[in-house]
Length: 294
Image 1: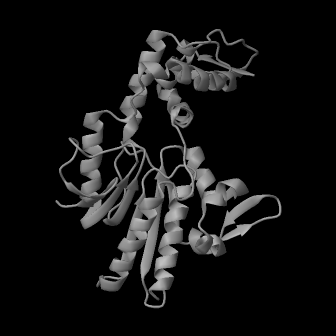
Image 2 (image 1 turned 60 degrees about the horizontal axis):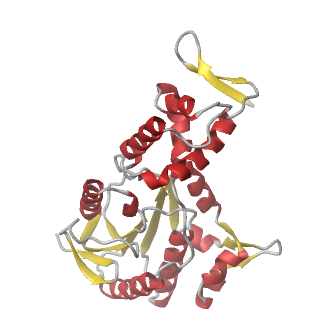
């Protein structure tokens, strides 16, 4: 076990110790400070109803760090020495619920859009961004549709340059996504026509084949930070993200997404999300599917 305290110079130090965690439920002052920090650095709004969840998830971090209570943890993550732990806090407090071909109508619409693009586009370039890729099921699903569309149109032989950027705020999820291995039951949702793009191993894991991996670049990215991308995207998937943001943060995010989309670019959002009253830069193309209009 380790414990964290301040040295004589005021810096946090970690030293071996055996401690008992004193708190079951995070105190109001500590909770308010933690959720203010989460909103500031990640745009995530934690309601009062999340107090139990925050307590449970951060208690594990207290155990790892050897801290006795949430007040010590708050001091750590709010200090200059807390950079690494702030990342761990974000990892602990973000939710990663995903599956292959989740919200299947999105992938039907994507396939139809790609068919039109590959038939008519003068510039043989395709860029798609999975802006909250979690453990990778979404970008691999996108890659399967892209690979199928390219083969169907013979576009691979015609020199099309297709790339998918997959990002997430949770560094642990980005690592899992880049590994590209999943329990077999998680791959059951993959349509039969794409089975040739995965490898089912004897140990019960399913691996994404190199043809899919070659299409995707995985990176950690906080959507609240400055974005390093320079070129524009044809399609952006930003699903089940803004449900954690307040309205001003949602407006800012959708405005930035619109700026990064090509004219007439497409945006896919989550099933419980809407642009109504948040952005006027998109036109609905179906259930949670939008086209940029300005």
